[in-house]
Image 1 (cartoon, helix red, strand yellow):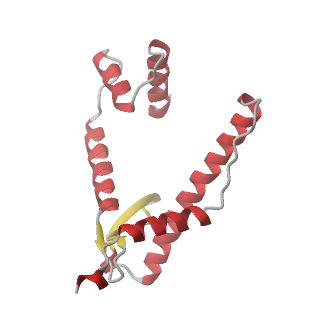
Image 2 (cartoon, one colour):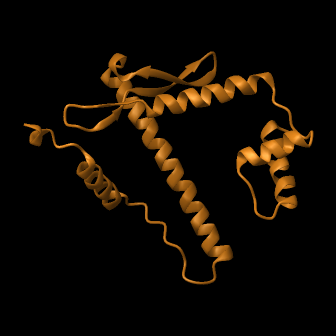
Length: 161
């Protein structure tokens, strides 16, 4: 049984005992306290790496137009037959590398949309006899609305004089 299978089994045990569900942290704490799970030494590195990646995603600067933009980006590279996510500063990346990074992030968004549509369709077909939920995948209006909202929150540099 894979490690992921073991973790899913722990979650199922927790859900069977707690009808309100729980956070991932609560489930793991329950498993640890009940002797059902113990961290592997690599778990600390993995957790630290996830925290570092989150911090790098949140690292932004303001461009000359007043927009907050990420300063660190990720590329997919194959090394030794393994696919790795390689982080770098946008200041050190070529236009070709930035394009690959943008394509990777777009693919992540598409994969999330495909999974969301699959789940909405399944829910509608199997558990929702009423009016089906819609899964509109055209985000044009959403992006425009968010851009306007962000623009309204930006400091007006022209008014500073």
